[in-house]
Length: 74
Image 1 (cartoon, helix red, strand yellow):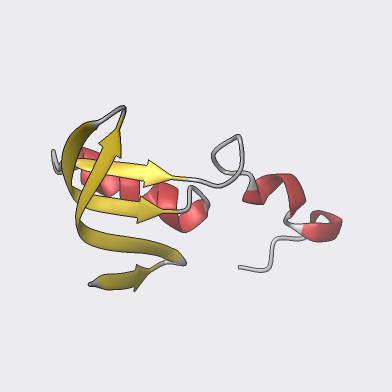
Image 2 (image 1 turned 30 degrees about the vertical axis):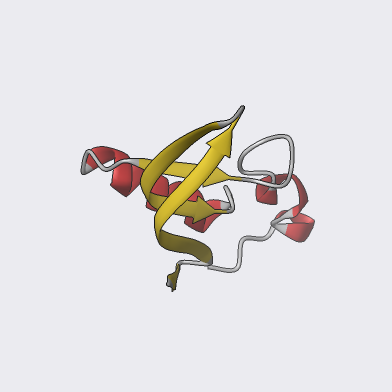
C-alpha cells in the first residue's frame, strides 16, 4: 500500500534483503528529491524506522536540473 506525498512515494512496511539478511522498515521513501527529503525529515524527527531509495548517485539531484533559467516557480 503506497501513498503519494509531496511528489515522494511513501510505502508502509518494507522488507529489504541485504547480503542475505532481512531488514524490516516501517516506512520506505521512494525518491530523494524535494518531496522525498521532506518526508524523510519528518520521519526522522518523529523517530520512525525508515529507508530512502534514490536512483541517482546523489540525493536531491532534482536541484542539479531545476529550476531552469534560475527561476523558481513556487
